[in-house]
Image (tube, rainbow, N blue to C red; front, side):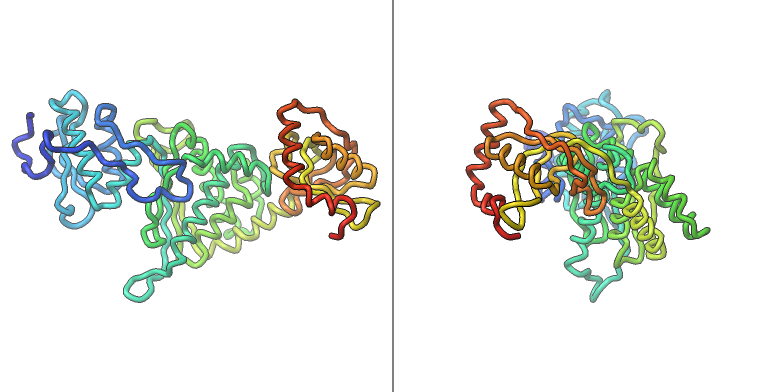
Length: 420
């Protein structure tokens, strides 16, 4: 096999003894992982994408022949004794063999950045990186809770972006949450780096809309915070809702900054997928400090207070019934089937409507009810309920509802007059 003559022979493993690249995710991928990512295939790896990912993650280009190949070493002093030969394009002789050797070396490397490069190759992804400036403890150690705080804040931020993709609102509560969480199932994460740094990989095929939304929303939140701190006015936060800012997003930023001296969020687009329309090619990191927290908290309170209730007509299966005595009004809990982007809702009904709901459940039918979905409590309560009627469903759904009834007969003591 042809090898550039100016490269040390111990930089790569001979191809006749070299195993194929190991799985890039040798440790758990994180709380959003939607299953293990396959190892990158040398035959399908774009050398230009590999070079871009190495540069992004701090690898250093140290020589090579311009236009033909480059030699890369890991970040840090001395490069850890590892270097990779990466062709500039697939026209280079023995390109696939060199790529296979580079991928194997990355899989064997102890550098955290090597795993991130492999994940970016295996699952073309936009990357979101969080940094928190945490005061060091004894000998530079951090409290064991710090990493979970970072992961929790990052989860909240991704969920806020996914909610904004579903529609704009100052406060979502339970609305769209199930669909937003489902859209994040394919997200992968790297190790938490002691609670100071974390990277999430959003697959381009399923997560780009979330990445684009966060790009716009974080910039708008930063601008609105600057405006509030300069003028005292909250008007910029009202306008920022159109860019995807919400109570969920401000709460996420507060959780990220709380207990830290500052935090940054940076976004980088998948090299092989191009730059989304309307976005900067290399977005600058967005930074927040403890001094921003009062404005962000006030914005969250404002979003919660001002988000209006809305008229809806919901179809749902009765899953629980309660009232204080054998007669009179009562409350039912519905599993929402249609009419609102929430999983469950609680409805107060008068005696006749309560009786209709109970009968519908006994024969395996959902009900339809009109009312106002209240923002208080997270859009989990329907008020001014009216027009309660059973709804016909197909046999499969009816059988499933009947099975649910048989498995939960005990709660009908409450429906028939048990105490609260």
